[in-house]
Image 1 (tube, rainbow, N blue to C red):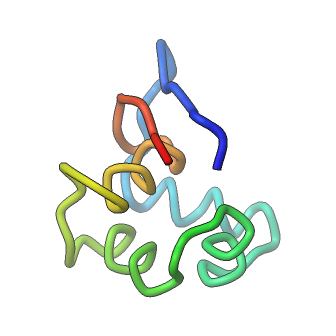
Image 2: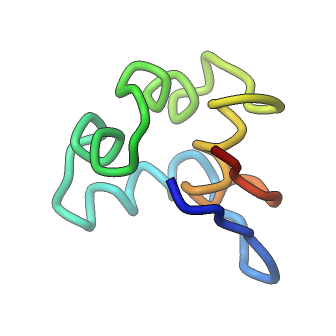
Length: 73
């Protein structure tokens, strides 16, 4: 995964992030695989059943645009 820094962009809500994936014509599982994440972890972040303060969940939230920060390997 490439380091990704989210700056000066409007953060998305969870609903907007899910819609963004749908607008790309992808399922959540496809999006997860394409971005190097486990599908179940992405689903847990997108549907609010998992926090996203640290680790893989943090990286997912940053790449989705729902959290500011830096996604690291």
